[in-house]
Each structure stands twice: as structure tokens, then as C-alpha cells.
Length: 174
Length: 102
Image (cartoon, rainbow over all chains, first blue to last red; front, side, top):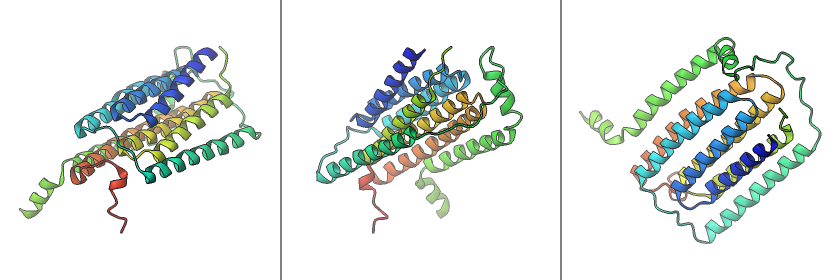
């Protein structure tokens, strides 16, 4: 169990670093797929089966396909990142990252107490999908419906944005 | 079934979040910046799932589900904006998009 966790964690960190550092956007996107899959493995290890599968379907499937499609549609070349200004900004970026990690470690090393654990353990015989479904469709029904409206709005918004300006201008002139 | 210590999971989440922040600050390709934002969202999701499984509660997992939905909507809108930006300016490098700079 711990070995698996360390394997997935190492895969996650290495792939995330490569996403940030690799020059080719397509390779970055593929490493991001690998990072999401490692994260799904960590979810499964923690007993969150539903989220692990949703992570693979939604992130590694849908979102990354969208990313790859846009990268290939735009036909991006390798990044050319040279010049003093870029170097300075890159140094500042790494410095800020190191500072953030320092803050995180100092905060984590201080004592922090969690609230009491939930005594009533949800039914876990066949994974937690049934339990999540019950909670999602009872207590969180209203947010769930709001989410569906959000997705509808996003879909309409994407169509309006990506349709282009030419046709809209033509309709305005008519 | 041994539990993974909570502090390790939170540390892993902090590391991934920091990598995402560095990616946003260091790169200038808008698509890579977007991927780094996705990394940060996933780090937050990992923290949610860790606390939820530690507290034996399902609420954190439900919240992660909502975060994923919002992330999907955000990615679709953001990529549409990037495509539109590329049509207008022929570039996705954020340095070269400085229309508001004055």
C-alpha cells in the first residue's frame, strides 16, 4: 500500500515537473495525462473509487482531449524562450515557488488538529459509488442541478465565443 | 488496509500546487499556463480527498466532484478564448498580448 503510494506520488511529481519544464506543448499535455492517472491511483488507494474513475474519464479523457485538440489546431511550434527579461522572470518564478513551498512546510510543521472524525462510516462493501450517489441526490441535489446549468451555460458560451467575429459582424450589417 | 498518513498526502498536494504556481509564473505559452492551473486544481482536489477519507466523510468527495465539473466548464471556455485570441493575434504567448498595457 505504502509502496504503491510512493510510486504514484513520485510519478505525479515527476510528471508535473515535466509538464512545466518540457518545451513541446504536446509532450507537456501527454505528461499531464500521466499525472492525472497517477492522481487517480492515489484516489483509489484512499478508497475514493468513484472519484478515481471520474478523474480518469473527465480529466485524462475529456479535458486532455480538448487540450490536445486545441494544441494541434493551433499548430504550435516549440517555445522559443530566450533573452534577459525571460531569464529574470524565470528566476523570479522559481524563487516565488521556493518561497511558497517554504511557507507550506512551516505551516505543516506547526501543530494542527483536525475536527472529530465522522463516526458513521458510509457503506463501503462495493466501493463508495452507491454512498456518493445517495448523498449527491439528497443533500446536494440543489448544487448538483446548478452544476448542470453551469455546464449548459459553458457550452453555449463556448459556441458563441468560438464561432468567430466575422459572422456576428455580418449579421450586424444585415 | 493501512492508512496513508495524512501529512504525507497534504505535503504531496502542497508540492504539486507549488509546481503549478511555478508553471504559471515561469512559462509564457498560454496553453502551458492553463495546464499548470489544472495542476493546481488537482492539488486542491487531492487535499479535499485526503481530508475526506481521513475524517471518514463523503462531503469532501462530493466537493471534489463539483470542482471537477467547474474545471471542465472552465477548460472549455478558456480554450475557446485562447483559440479566438490566436485568430486575432496569431500568438499564444502571453508576453506578446499587451493590448491593455498602455
